[in-house]
Length: 315
Image (tube, rainbow, N blue to C red; front, side, top):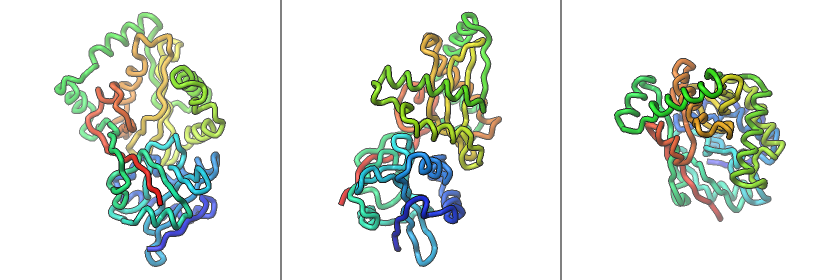
């Protein structure tokens, strides 16, 4: 198998059909992070994106996109936005990651959300954290019943909080898929404020114009493989909580949730999440992937989890 590397621009849109066919044939690549359009959007706004092409004969057997973080160091495309990464290939494609580094003139590749069922990476994996999800493939009622049977249901408590929020601020109104760019701007402002309060000014992701541009373009994307979804919960005329995520086919990836700090006592973020889950089946969404992390709200609602891999390859 031959490995060649090229800039994303040099790879060209001609590779997109083969890329999409490989992705469709591998259920482990359902996440919108593996969509051609996601890589393309990041490449245009950040630069430095390259792609490795694995060829068997004259046929592409796989693609591995990456971002050159330094002259000889690679990181996943879109870091720190990337919640999933790996090789775009059919199940079972095996190669030596150190040989890949050599072909691309790299000395290291650090990963933290690598798909775990891709062979070849095992010697370099240092940890396997879990990425919780809500699986609605058996229906909303089945999911709710399962949560109650497991003793992890917060539905009754959320009902009480929702009624209290209505009394204080007015009727609740839920928008599942808002196309309003002004609302997205408000969400990003709230998220920036949260980053500054909890992590410090230097960790504000949306202080970086290219990150704002990436999210804005994804919001406008309406392709089956990549669709931005902005959901909002109102209490009267007050924006109580909002979430911006990405959808690919029947999977919604949980990404940027925010809530109005003044309404914290009512758990508006949890109320919004419950509305998103309830609306998902009617919208054709069968899986809501929370991404890596063991936050309490994720574990209360999740009924399954993927493993992802953390580690580093060097040569």
